[in-house]
Length: 270
Image (cartoon, rainbow, N blue to C red; front, side):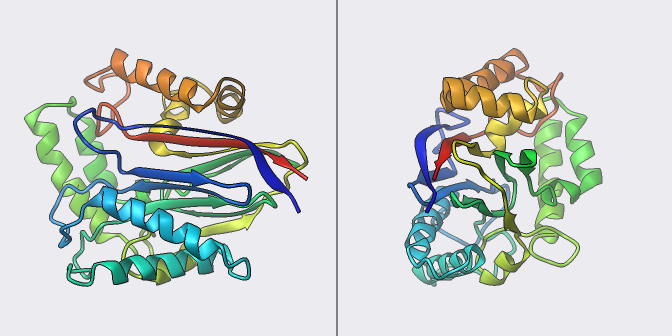
């Protein structure tokens, strides 16, 4: 059976004053990376996004120990388990905590729900699995946000209707799907199988680290090469340097000056 080796991990919060809402862990048999969705409205939950991402990640690892489960089944089990951990919270609230999930097995099976990316050197070339459905919601509201510089009152005000439009499209047909309180969302994940030869490099990363590609610093192949050769921290530091060169988002319009950035790399061994 194949496994992962040469595992490397790096993660940095987007702000030194706020806990990261990313979560990741990797074993020889599974890579799991989560990206908690930023809360800009009430959530009906007293625990917060970091708590949700951490407990969902740990629950995914627990469920994945049952190798008879598909990755969809793993996600469903984990989402249900976390919902049972805080029944005192209003899990029907439109803003209930949520997180994107990416899981990858060394045999090439993958699961992506939300904006967490998988990049791999597959038998068909560089494969990139990205769920872009969330970015296709609230298009007009997102464009309005991008008109304003980071830190201005106008941008702060525009972010609220953008988030409301995003939440209105969450976990409904025609919208986007993400892990929250209903395990049925896992049925709408991007799933499949990558052909991974012995020694194939792979990476799983949150959108904060994927800014290297979004900003045009590297293409996906270059991103994978750099992260494997120099380590995920080097990639994240390049993203941070770019962000620091454009603190107001004039060159690269975005919602946050810096975002939580997390990346795991590995190679496949037969």
